[in-house]
Image 1 (cartoon, helix red, strand yellow):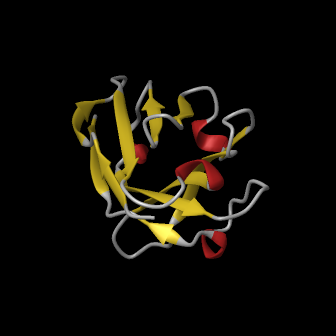
Image 2 (cartoon, helix red, strand yellow; image 1 turned 135 degrees about the horizontal axis):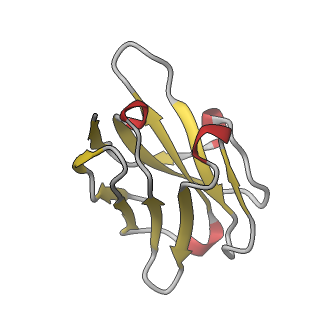
Length: 123
């Protein structure tokens, strides 16, 4: 599975962005999809994940109520809608695919990774 993330940018605090991650090869619907974020010198952190059908989602606590993960299996794309953005959300956001049935927050469980898309939130 090859993944291409897009949609990052510079936004003021309180603003919104929608990230997209398109899969160009492989069977997209056979994969749990996740979003992670990373800042320089820090570990990659889990943000959100969605089940293969899109019926189940999970989020890290700091983004609950502000971010929404969704997927369109017909379009082979996973999205991350980010609202009420805060400066601490600033990071490179990466999408990932895991060939498994159950959701996971562990980056080691993901088999494929896209390149990061930078999100910068100014105060």
